[in-house]
Length: 301
Image (cartoon, rainbow, N blue to C red; front, top):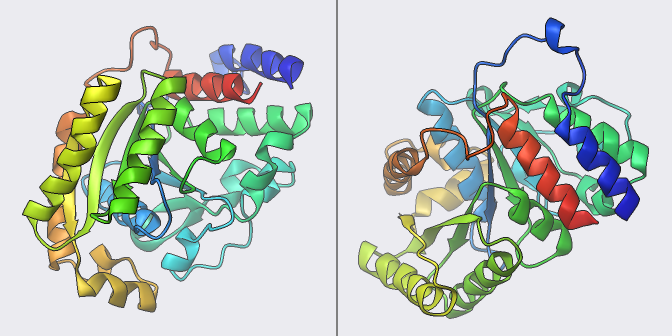
């Protein structure tokens, strides 16, 4: 994989596709965001979907990549049945535009299927095609959200360490807290400049949410010298499970629910936390996506 990764890193450093003279300048600065958790069952994918919808309601263009290996279920949460998924892209059967689907409120998403299982064993030609296709998204959306698998699989780590920032979703359960810290520790050791933010899901009240976040923040500060801001606390709202059963995002089905109200506040805090410009050295129109792909390929070598 070393020669393959090096060749593709060289590709990422170049403009791909349409010659510069013919390419219209994208209007948006695309940011890459991963959403993860230390363990399964904390509501990460449901949070990702509704977070994306609320970002879009604020005027942002968002694309969700379902990168949860073995548990890809973003489409299920929306009651969607995509004809194509990431597998068809990785095997060069379809372009990225052909596998993008529309969910509620025209939210764009890419179903994972079994595709990410194959990511780390692609041929040079398949990986080159994937790289070119992801680069074509530059400037077409404001945010690309990768809903990664829970835990520390190599595939999940590939995306988390390559992204500009990561939201870690946890719950007040002790095992969830411990596992959330474990994934922060592992990612920080491999890529110290990944920006983390915390979301505590299924809290009984704000006090419990703050106590949970403070535990993670305290050990991260003490042992990793890392200050992790908290985005918010999502209450344990019965409307969330009702929406899951009906396969409609809770923020769409129950726009006035306690969970949706807190999510809207969380999105506002997220907006405020975003840097006004691209990271230093990323003046290219495709800087954020190129940086993501370069780091991803470095991790894969």
